[in-house]
Length: 170
Image (cartoon, rainbow, N blue to C red):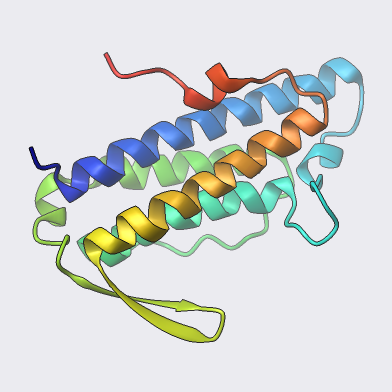
């Protein structure tokens, strides 16, 4: 059985972004319940040399948008990384979801063999579309979702594995 590049990316990224959106709701509620400035969570990091919560959300968005550009040739708008509130982060996630929802399976046809060039740490890596999806896109996307999860858990937000997994497909 084969799986289309669309099916390997768009539904998976949408599900992950749904988890991110729910995390943002729970984080915002947690700050309100505990009576502290939401900016504390938005700027929270696991370690001083790691990116904060806001950047984790931004990177999930960038990863999803990058998949549309690289695999389907879809032009997507640049989103400046200027979000400083939960409302702004939620808007970014919603805009990313809308871009993914507008993509069609036809746009991804043949992308498994497409040559993808990634510039990583001063070097260029060339991958096929399939290698890009399985070896970079999905691991990178879920690295940032996981780091977001960990930042929130570390700061007392009540989330767990069931929240991370989200709704299972019917």
